[in-house]
Length: 125
Image (cartoon, rainbow, N blue to C red; front, side, top):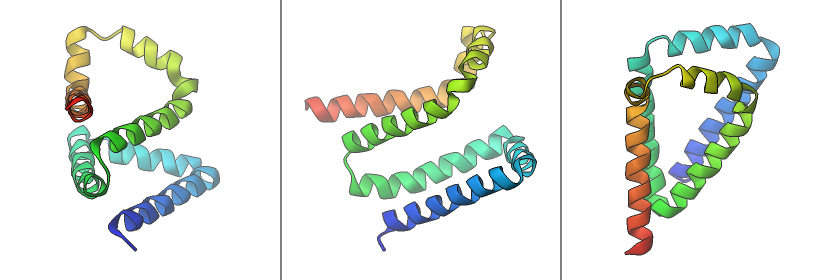
């Protein structure tokens, strides 16, 4: 198996385990989710480390344009799951000031800004 296939298998198994746990013991899954997301700094660092590791393998196989389109596909799939929560997300966001939005989302905004500029540079150069 290639590194990409190994990563795919690992995450496919994790997704199946999550779905099984959610169906069998939803409250246990919620407790687990609350525990791992309690400390924002630690979970952010874990996600950054995983993104760097996955990014290394993904960008060694695919172009930035391909990765960008695949990321958009993933976002659309996640958005489908968030549709039932759009109203509460919008209500929460409306309560936030511009400064709070920037403070909360600066890293994500920076990553997507760099990603978009990189794609435009590659496509038009």
